[in-house]
Image 1: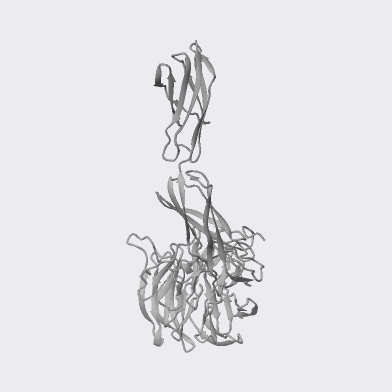
Image 2: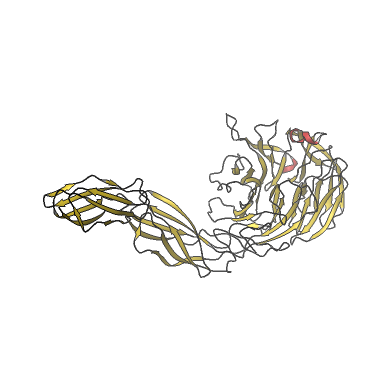
Length: 576
């Protein structure tokens, strides 16, 4: 199977596995090991609304949306944690928004004019509560012992993005207005400690959307921190796609299509002291989710080609362990992660991710199991280099060996290298580790003096980072040479013609070399006119000798910062 490019799913960084369902593989970089698995199932609908994960009964509920016509019925597909479909729940009206009760005994589904409750073991409807009519799609969140849901007020689908949306609460089988409302399809997310997030997607009536945290304890709804992100000039406004609480509730991660992944402090929604690295170039944030055990953060994105659509990384932003990266590409597993499309099991053993094609008409459910253990990795034997004498501007090979514990990688490991010289630190790039653990780093140093190479293995979710290895190389000037072709004899009347070639190794000269020509005869030594070397390295010296007998012509170049000096001589016997 070609893991570099194929019409199905690629994985582009640090994991390798046998994938269930579609028989796919996960590729990796900076390191790859058979550590994570990914089962993929095709969802039985052409729109997507919400996902809810019941970790008590190991059930995954995925709902369609189908809000384009008010008589549409809805579908909730139910899977176990292995990806096998257990049943498909048909709802009397289109469904949008899912939420689970705190004990996972009830699944709440938002219908057009009601909230339907289903038993999570029998999947039978258990209770029906009325709600204001929704023609756009609801958001549901269970927090503080209450079910909260949004109700956009629009009768036309093309006006849903700017509709006035209300935050309602279910009480005794009916609903009550909380008094909170604003424009657009407001999103909800419950979190630990009786907290709930509400966010506003960007729309034509909200140029500077908000994010806010509510305290839902004791059945009340108290707004705490709130933030809008645009500056005084209107730049930097939030383009909300998803949001999630950390496992302990102290942080909020936001998938912002205009910014990337924001990490905020829950108490005041200020920027956290440490941020996550930027998403890969070309990836637009679409979803975000923390694992329930507090170890991982999943960042979903929309990207094309080989750019990753999903990064699975440590939740601690100061942990530099390189992430697992997934590239979704093709009809076997979708093209990107759907907005609001990810949830974890409570123990962090599985990530459930919904992907979609570029036009949003097909959907897939991925069940990803992160590796449970990490193995040690080490460099052995030090580093060597060749050629023995490095010169500026010429290729240099630095070689070493990496050993690792645990399973053999199905995709080669990679190490990262930097070079420190008189001009600073330079990224040399990555090198692939062969099956026997050896690797070769190719570089072309361009500064004379000591160059110190540092080789790193950054680790991944399966392997711990290795202790860096360094190696210092003394870089010399590149050699130059001058070759002369001169006649053995010449005459005073006919003159002397000498041809030659100037050769400079290493980095190309910024300008054509200018050579000094000195003539020595029985009358003494004098400097002739300099000659400029042609583009092909050749030159010609024409001279009218001033004396008979042996005349010696010495041609020289003084060298520069990167090249040695060179000289050559030719003697011609001059006759009358």
